[in-house]
Length: 172
Image (cartoon, rainbow, N blue to C red):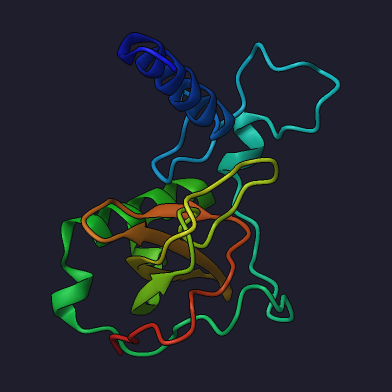
């Protein structure tokens, strides 16, 4: 029979192992919690450089994982939100254009299917729970970009978006 101390040690070891298997949080994460490349990354890995992650890539309309992006008129009550203004400024910087050249092409209240907030990174593990959030679609020169957020969190750029869970609530 195990003593109370032995049970506590075993429990602590199990929790430590479980948390270690979930990944390691570092200061090298983006606002969405995804890892960013660091100078110490092994040169043989295929991790993108910080410069590469700053460059937006157009969303392919035939990408089945992206789903239909929520486009359409967006009320001024949404466009004037500080987190939306910050996302517009971020996209203008990424595209090297004036803020006025960025159009808010769509917005929706959504439910993300897991903790990746619709922007999973290869090799990462995420909580497997529905996450209420938002999706913002910005446009410059006909190219769309998807910005994602969990409720109460700032938007972050998602280069390879996947569709929210079924039953999300479009806010358009």
